[in-house]
Amino acid sequence: MSAPNRDVKATREQGMDEYRLLIYLLELCEKNGQRYDQHYFDIDNMLIENLYEKYQIEPTLEELQQVVDRCYARSWLEHAYMSGSQYKGLKLTTTGSGVATSKRKSDEAKNSRPFLKKASDYIEEHKGLFVLLGSLIAITGLLITISKGGG
Image 1 (cartoon, rainbow, N blue to C red):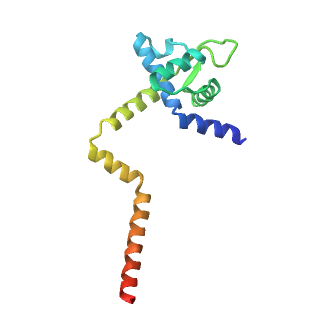
Image 2: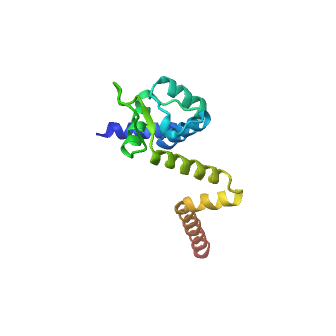
Image 3: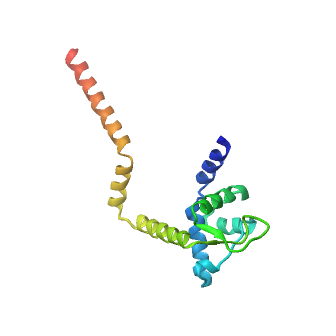
């Protein structure tokens, strides 16, 4: 049972996740002037090459299939038509399109923050480390004070 979790972790470490796939598919629809529910795609080596061109990441076919499985389980993708494979003839759902749009806007907002906001957010996200570091500095100062006072 631990093998699938290891594969998911490896895929995410390489940078391929559900959001990148959904955003790529939505942008492809926009580029071609198609509605998201009218553009069909297959999980194949061509898609892997296209993802590499966009994100400079190259998941294996199996890793990409796992990403698609998670998207399918969350109703972000569905089959547009039945084919011989569960990884052919897929399309974005309304929910998948909404998730991609929301994530893309969130990423754009996050990237356009001023430096001070980025620094503030970094501190907020890592406040446990800063508390630990502050505690270590305080304890070190206390030990130095005690050792000087005692000697």
